[in-house]
Image (cartoon, rainbow, N blue to C red; front, side, top):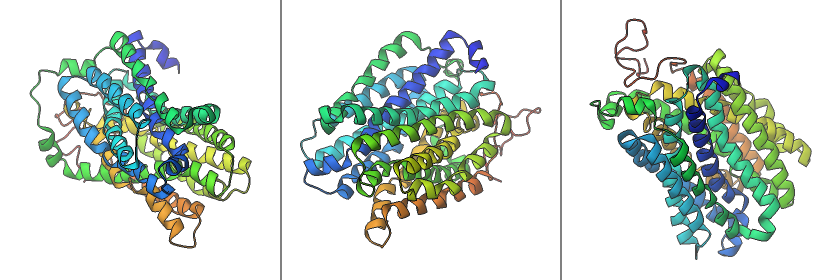
Length: 421
């Protein structure tokens, strides 16, 4: 924390804007997980059918990462971040006016495109603007915006749902557009992007082709990460409502508790990764989930479930809290707004079936929803530590235009530095 006191005012503004961007984006996404049952009732459908909207949102996020990422690599991080915020706020608002289930799916898909762009652009702007020694801490802060958005959604659901209804809750998601005024007035462009704006750059597709092993590896890794996150978050309120029969206020309180745990986890392990290393921090955080599963999925009371969910999200977001720094550190500047977000969102695409998968497992077998969620989480909590061992890390290294440039003092910056060997 003392390190942030040495930041310039502009660096602090960049951190605030990027954190709030991801927070408000996540708020819009997670509003939906609390009202699946109510949307289904409005459109005379079932929860499983409505949950397909979650799949739509997740599935198109790679397209958003590609579109907004390439725009940010070409025209700058700051203006594209503003455009991104306007887009996801607009589609969040339009969701409230969906006349039928088909239009609802279309609007949530358009929101998914906008949502897919924010993380890559915001994390690139942040990591290129702050001191290298602060990346781990800021990585945790940035990623904690996701559970913070979930927490805000839980608060709105608990305090205002009876007044707003599900349509009113989506109308509230237009508020994030105000963030554009803060960014325009207070946030500077990335100094790394400005220094290299006129540098001749390798094409994205050429770079991805040259580094196809790295790209494929991170897509698979981020698929596991996204099953870890969405497998513990998206259907948990529905599980509490339908299998535990808790009131909406009890569900809201439990969601607030576990999102506090998520924020703590992201900050804790993001900061720890600066000393322990990115890979070791991810391994430790992921393995915490295994002994917590019985409390999280099979607890008999609201208190036990809340404790289990709190610890589970420390694990999940603890692992996630390291990834913004890790992915940005291994990416060259000319694809930094694109590559981290693209592999993240391609992982989302492959994990987009999570909600329908968990519901299908529960419906087509003798399993409960609790059992199907536990199985998914148990598998990925083991897969992530195994996979993370196969990558290098560039913790504390300078963020330059091209990490593949030769440097006799840094053996990692070799022609094979971005290849898994």
